[in-house]
Image (cartoon, rainbow, N blue to C red; front, side):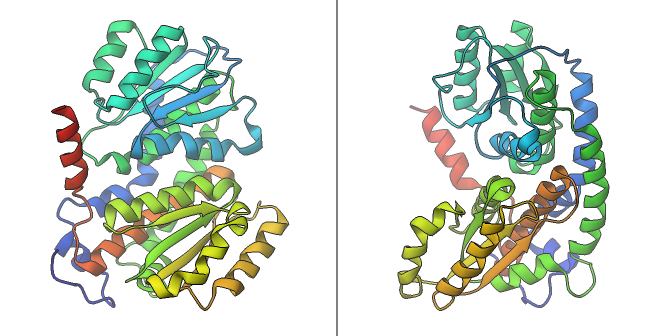
Length: 355
């Protein structure tokens, strides 16, 4: 672990001291990633087709989250099932009338390669989104469309590309409307938010304030509806960027179990609650957040309620994705930890490959 950084200084100079690979710049490039992703999907020359069975997005980690975020962006505009699978197999209800989008940034993810093969055996329509690797080689051999993604990132930094790819494939297979105009509007909105939340932004920077508040604690992030997959994204970004345990749940379900567990939180350590809220949530969700906050107040290190920003669903989802990515990076900086490396994941992959 590197030397600690003064928690009052999260300037670009402070970030540069620990962010050796420049992950901050990849995060702040999210607006451009969204725009570039639309162009890259067009370059794949996808033709429209009909998939009465809906869409399955097969992927792991940072490559899988795009499917979940795309489903949230579509909301009640989705006309057919859109589900993800994170594992070696497809859902049992997958049929030849289902489209399977295989998402793997590296193109080497063994679980996703297994799903690609399974979809081929079923005769399901397949599309691939990747930088290359074995997945791209097999797709080109099989005549399967490949949506190209630029290399050079950690997979988690390609979230914009993976989300847009899933949205565009959903539109192509008839699972939802095309969201290109919403994506363009969201990118413009994110440009503004990057200026507000970047390391050299003026006082009142929400991303820095949240990182300071959560410092030294284990984040427990809750979402509801549109923000549920974003809460999961926040959890995984704290894991990979800040190298700390983090957990997520969703309302109203957490009020039927996790709420009780908070009774013993303070005796075990420092746990912080983060509620990701949205203007379109059921009115009872707001009441639950207020009451849950009151009931866990004496046990939580801090409680933060964070709303989405923007009008359309893509804006609102991606505003919280950007914020969570920055908060987790600032959390790493506060500890003097380089956010980019994930050595333990690489060790696991190497050991699995040897078996």
